[in-house]
Length: 384
Image 1 (cartoon, rainbow, N blue to C red):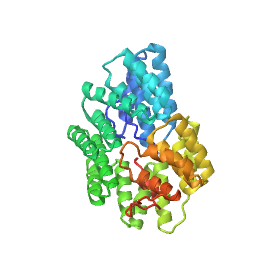
Image 2: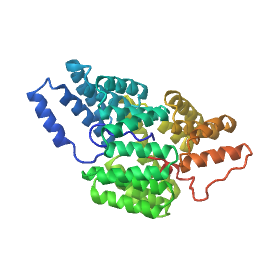
Image 3: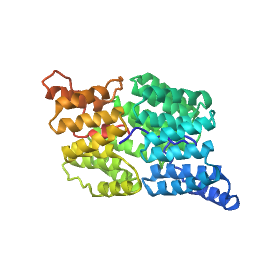
């Protein structure tokens, strides 16, 4: 799991609308106008989106090829640089993403998309102050779904749930495409879910699917509500549909944990295959494997992955992953400073709060564990 990486091209949604007709149109245009570097950059942005939407990392290689062509035509164009920044972010190379986004902004200070990628990458690197500055600039330049969604996430990270909800409601009002409506409704559901309001979460997920039935994250949200509500058979039926559509590691881990909760055996074969595919495509995701190994595998391996992730991207989630890995490896004293960092901004994340409480208790300190939190389903508490 990583912090949300929003699309930079049109809207932040993991848009489930079929992209092939649009891609074909661009390809036809590029056959006529092979020197149109901005169309090459736009094609690359669609490939980056498709990598996230489909879970197929081979789209990153296609995006790289399109961007290489664009860069040969005009390397200093802001659209080309923004596309390169988005590709770097998709591959979790966030330092490179910042460098490229800043170059794009230098080339065109009025390019809202570049500020969006910069905000995402700065968040991943743990620089929340600069991330908020980038979000504010994006709001000034182009208030809309993409900017409001990022503003919501920034508010959420500092513990301002009302502000997070307000910005998502603004995004929802601004959304006119079905995929954007589904996206905003889904994240309103996520806010409710992590506040413990399963009924409201279910309502938003249902409305998201009404807006766009193919929007897989909302289907996964319904599976979470069912699992957390104790309806495990129903949850597993939904998860089967989710992973058939989109076998992302996050969903595969959620499915496996729900199977364990139901007294079944988890099969991590497909998860490990996905790991190999993403690594072959140049995607560095030590965070997912740190969390997985800590909860379901080898704590020593969890520490190794978590340290690698934190060294590259010292954000709140990476700090929590390292804290939890160290705790599971029997090192709660070493874990505590990272747990404190993970909870330092006021972010009301139930998983982070649970991890810190367990670490505090392991050190003999009084700490309250939320009785409503289910430690057997940790992946379901992660923000997707």
